[in-house]
Image 1 (cartoon, rainbow, N blue to C red):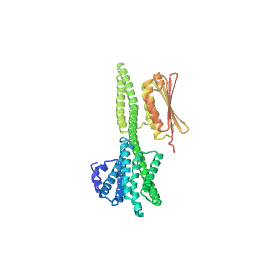
Image 2 (image 1 turned 120 degrees about the vertical axis):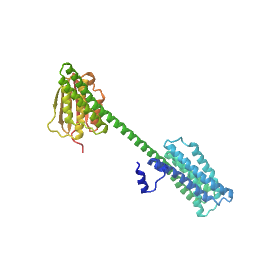
Image 3 (image 1 turned 45 degrees about the horizontal axis):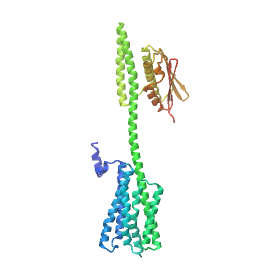
Length: 413
């Protein structure tokens, strides 16, 4: 981060912190707020220019020059606050929006007073700009995504006001119709601009919140993965350490010191392997190898006095992901046999069933808790296999517990 500023400075001018410190969504929102102010102020200044000099009194001209721009800023502020309400940043500015509408109708007499009864054609267009201030509140009212029928009603009301104002001012039918048509487009544009602005900002902030939620879910998923891997690693290794330590203690009591020492050396080696695996889990690079896990399962089970039969095809094509997943199945199943059974024998068989590889682990001497298939280890295995399109089922009958895992042998194209 320290060497980033010089590169940015060399590439071009540095933007103010109030801009660079904002997210992309916040920048778009800031531009939208500014657009409301510019739109309202531009319309108001146009109205002030069109009526100034035709009010016949200096006081009226001053009032127009002051009141119209102030009104435009008020409209922009009201639209900005309505947009904040749309995205849930504040309460609905009902009073402010009502005040804007009321002031718009109070300014209308200035426009009518400025307009002559028989204006030149150029003045008619200027008159429309002035009367257009009446349509500005539509942008405020439609920011909150008002229903389409209500927006249509407000546009119709604005056109009616402009039409009535032209008739009261004594305009001919042609100019009245032209002003009404232009007012329709001004009102419709204001309504569309306000509605789209509120709608777009809602979508952008929802997407922004969804991105945060996705990041939080990714963190939670990584935590679950880490907890699952740690459970798998520590569960098996602790079971092996406890088993061989107990065996070493029995041998030592019987005076078989050499055999006891050999078991303790295995304990030391297993502990060192566990340390390496835990470090690998933390780094996220550890993978379980199927052949290694099968060999380890045989050694662990036979050390516990459990006959172990392993039956696998001589040649079977498995993807690396499938081998890793089935390696975890062997590891978890071996741990469950040691922890949750009084088994005398265990069979581990791998077979090919069409495009799927099926691993079966069966042991006798299952306890009731194991027969129920309870525990977080099997849940973690199901989640791991599900990511590959695999399944995990358990079955218990007459003291025999059977775990069956199935995964695709090849990746789907």
